[in-house]
Structures are given as C-alpha cells and as structure tokens.
Length: 411
Image (tube, rainbow, N blue to C red; front, side, top):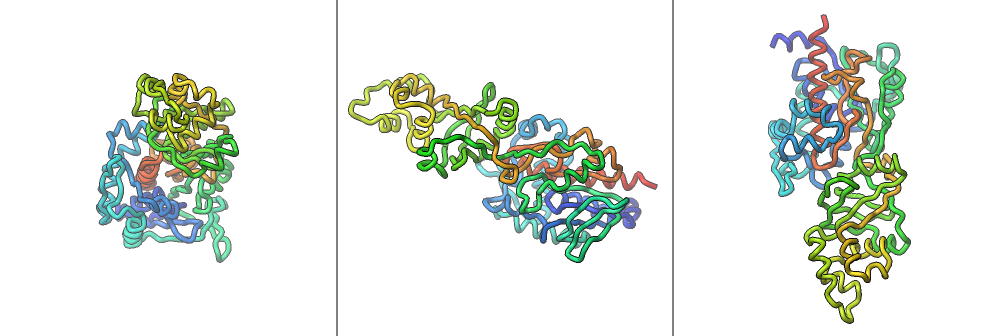
C-alpha cells in the first residue's frame, strides 16, 4: 500500500492501444500510477478484434519448452517475458475478466464465446474503473523538447509524463493502425531498429495461367511441408492468384523469407500424401491402370486429385508422371519455388523492430531512460496459433513492471 500511495502523483503515457499497451496500462494503474493511453485510431484494440473474427486464438496449451521454441532465434529474449506472464497466467487473467477459456483439439486456447469483443469490453471497463484515460485520434509525431507531440482533431498538442511505454505495433495492417511510422522517430534518437519485414505472410509463385485460373482460392489439405534440411510440418495452405498463403506457409515464413533474401528464391518441399510411405505409394502406382486415365489412377492409388494433382502437373510433365516410381517420389517431395514474400501491409504480423541490444531486461531503452517498448514493435516474431498474442501480452506486462520499478527508483 505504501508504494501505491507513493505512485499516485506519477504519470505514465502509453502510446498504442493494442494488447501490449493495454496490459502495460493495467499493470501501471494497478500500482497507483495515473495512466493516459494515446492511440491514432478512433478506437483501441482494432487488430485484436480482427484476430478474433474467426475465433480468438488467445494462446496455446503445449509444454513450455515447445511453446518457447516457436519464437525461433528470438526465444532467448522472449523467455523471461513468458516466465513473468505466460500462457497459464494469460488464461487466469482472462478468467478474472469473466472470460472462460478452453483448449481445442489442436491444443489452441480460445475464449468460450470464441470472440475478442466480450474480452475487450470487460478489459476496457476494468481499465476505466482503475482511472485509465483514453485519448483517441491522437497521432504521435515524436518529441518536442522533453514533451511528446501529437496531431489531434483539435490541432497539435504536447504532453509530458514521468514514464512512457511505446506499444505502437509493427508494420502490417496499416489501416488498423500498425503502419511503422514510429521507426524514423526512434531512429532519429539513435535507437537501432531492424528493418520491418512481412511475417506470417503469403508468398509469390510463378503459376501458369492454366493453374491460376483453375485452382486459385482452393485449399491444399492434409499435407506436410519443409525447407531444405528442416523438419516436416503438417498442415494446410491456400493457393492464391499470386502464390500460396495459410497456416502451414505462415509457420515456415521466417525460413522462406530468409532464403529469398539470400538466394533470390526459396524451395518449399511438399508431401502430398503424408499418410502413405514412398514404398507403398510406389507399389500402388505400379499397379496396371488399364484403360484408366492418369488422373483416375492417381486418385485411386495415391489419393491425389484436384488441386494436388494440379500441383503435380505444374511441376512435372505428363511424360514424367507416366513413370510410377518418379511420380511416387514427386508426390512425397514436390518442390515448389517461391520467388517473393507478399507486401508487408498484407502480412498478419511483421518481423524486425527495436533490437534487443537497445533495451535492458525490463524493456527500457538504454539510450532513453524512462522510455519502455513492448509488443510487435520489438524485433521478434512468432507463428499464428496464440504465440503472437501471448508474447504481446507478456511484453506489455514486463514493460509495465519495468516502468513501475523505474518510477520507484527515482527520488
């Protein structure tokens, strides 16, 4: 109680009303800090609400080490965030808002109502009751001296605060507020920022006109995919006019993007029938097909038809597919050349951002004491499946705690 009393005269400004910013606001207001949230959009949590349109995947129930592995090279940085506020804590927090969660058959965790809106409404109600104030349509333009400068519907205004948390999002979905406009503002202050790149994104493939016109929009289900030297991952994806997208592609996007950057293209390997071993598949395809067409033979003996058969024909000639042994190998390892990632603004999330070396363990900028960063504007990435949201919540929690620690350390 003593600390809360000490903190009542302190003020915190939070830029960005997504999960990371709102979580930092909850932590700070709970310690007695006067909290003001500024957001450029007419309402907060817009990207969060969009994520919940098809059923809000809040987090995942898998074992901690496997969960952490989803963050790839950023895992060492993300680990302490998850230790402070991980999947179990996130579910308990949702329960405290009256939102019950459940574990789906895939291990993913969802609110019982499957929507983001009820959770966001309950959260906003609690934040307002705690005294958090919201300032919408306030676009941050950087610093003016020691004050923050905003463009507002009423003109420019400046704001001063004792502590500041930046939770401005990455660079994808600019129409929802994540436009990366903060990058030059931090770089002007000497803060190193890794280039924002598309993550959880689609990729371009140079389809033939025939394939594009016949199969764009169709789902490729029950397959596995991998990059050279990597482990196969099971899932599905969508064929688009431009190339491929969907959960299986998103999970592999960091490696695919890196390969394209270094080599100019990436080869995605597909197993069109993971349930059948190569030897069995070869034996089945070697059976006489008589008067049957190749398409019927592939459907009956290999379970390959529709868009899967189209992918085979896109990669191999009719003469090559007439040879059963070669066809079996092609089904089990079909190479698909990806030539470019889709534009950043189409991506679900972004990689890049404020680098880990620019911050201390409490997520405070080393070059700017009292300024903390959280969420997707940091240089980490994760696949969909609850991992993105969990780390955003967790980093907001850590930044909020860090801001409290910094305020208490000041005279």
